[in-house]
Image 1 (cartoon, rainbow, N blue to C red):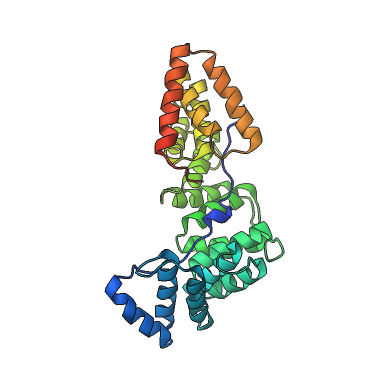
Image 2: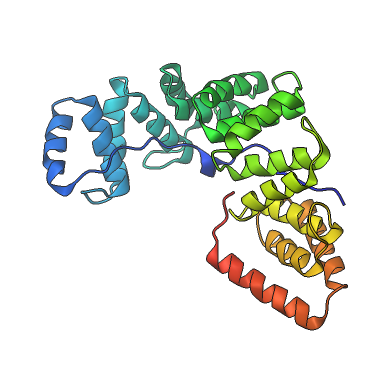
Length: 297
């Protein structure tokens, strides 16, 4: 039963939003005055304040209005946020083409969040023709600026040779940069590389360390891999109860249907080595864990 890893961070929920500094209540009046006078930074900050309900009531339409004013003056953060609004249909009708237009304006100015978001659009083929080379190019620009999701995605591209030449060593370099920032998918991908000796010397113990870091963040694929490792005693002492625990958690998370089926089958195999009391205890532990932890994917 092969281990799995999560691919790129390409889910819409992970599109990056540009953030403004918190607005203290007594400063909101001054902020509104500056925004009304045409100060683009103040307009962006006021838009963020309305979006987050920071010193003013939450108002998506008002947020978009101020983002647009700032974006039209060339404020890259506002352009990125306006792109994200069109991408999701938040405060405006959903329009992927318009989203790409604003992402590109911000990305061309060097905004790292917009560069990642534009890369995602090319990766999905949303609002623009799918182009894996162009996606990798934008990931690279965002990754060079330290965006962890872009670093993970670029690592994946080098790992599989998608949009760039296949290069396991280069993949490891980017996975590591992302994993060192605590990115769960990168930790899982790097763990998988160590488990299989792909771009690094095979090291089951290091694979477990990385899987555990990602699993503790709620990463379902890392949890699945960790459960298999405990079942087979690969890099850890064989422990069917611990295998059942991690496999059960992973089966309740975000897995592709085929991997979820494998998790359930492996969990049943682990259960065959356990007493009813052991299973009940593992189920209780898993239920408590799921209640106390939110997923990272």
